Length: 214
Image (tube, rainbow, N blue to C red):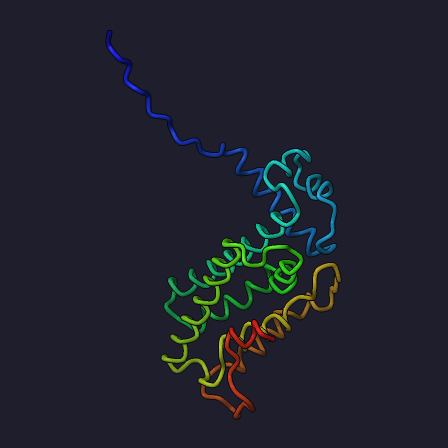
């Protein structure tokens, strides 16, 4: 009796509509977290995304997993904007500018603190997104310094902290005035980073380790 040849099982991939639903949920969550803060009901997020409650819970079983996905996606898009600017022109300072302005538009300063509310701030996805954005920023700054574009007495932590402070306000505050002037003030900050430096900065450059311990 001839033995039937086993049929290889094909790896299943998410359907296109399932991926679109997930993207709609993440986009709606990002918007509503910024507008109302991290406690916005998941049912309201589902309504804005145009999907059923069950679809939200099928993709994100709890609030922590949704917050984590939103923050990771925002950090990834910000890093991609800087990478694209660097690849397009080779100008490291322009890539730094693109990074800072995109971070403001993506509301990183409002969304990243939400991770502190989760039970696992060291989740592998968060760690990977953070490492990518920190390494990319450091690489861009090193290249800008080597090209004589960026003053030598600033560190990655300086840029991350000041960009966050000058960026849009915390989630749920709805400050239209800050929204109106954020890019103007960020550009003033960026112009102050250009070499040659016009003054001597007090203290020492802030590293990412300094920022994490602050």
